[in-house]
Length: 235
Image (cartoon, rainbow, N blue to C red; front, top):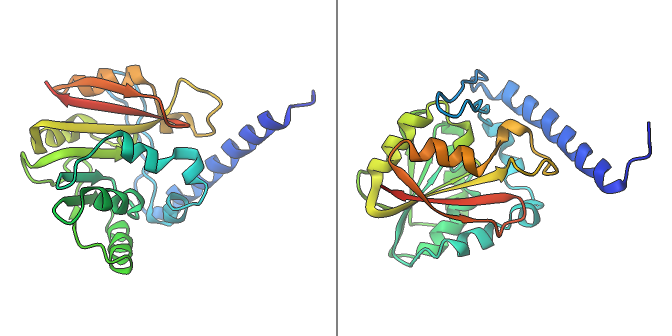
C-alpha cells in the first residue's frame, strides 16, 4: 500500500469509527433499521440513532465540527419567538434555542423516542430551563401546534425521516405564514467529511424533496465547517 498523508488517514479512520459506532447504536437502540427510498429523489433514508447515541450528540468535538452557536446566530431568531427543535435528541440544541428566544419565547422539543425525551427533561431540570415544552412525536407527525411556529429547526434529522413527505406537510401546517423551516445537514457534496453517505444530503436533494411539499428554498448558508444551513419558507 502506498504511503497515505496523515490528514487522509485521519479522515478515513474517523469515518470508519463513526460507521462502527453508528451500526452499534442502531443495533442496540430498538429502533427499526429498515430504510426506504424517497420516491422523487431516489435518496435512501438513513437509520435513526437510538438513545444509546446520546453521548455522541453531546461530544466536546461538536463545537469545532459543527459550530452550533454560529448556526444559531446565523438564523437571527428574535427574542420572544416560538420555535421547534424537531428530533431534539438529548437537547444539545434545545437549550441553545431556549436561551436565544428568552423567557418570553417558547421552544417545543420534539422527538419520537421516549428515552431521548427523558434525557432531555433531566437536562432541562439540571440547567433550570423553563421555557421548553417536550413533545412526543411519531415518525410521520411531529405533533406540533398548528400555525404557531416562527421557526422549525432539524439538525441532522431530516435525512433520517422514514416518512418525509407526510412529515413535511405537518411541519408546514405548524408554521406561521412567514415561518421558516431550517435543515442542518452534512454536505454530501464533500466526500472528505467523515460521515456515512446516507447521513449526508446535497442541496439539490433537499431542494427537490422539500419544495415538492409546498416550500421554497430561500437561502443556503455555507458558513459552518461541515453542514449546509438550508432555510425554507412556505410557498
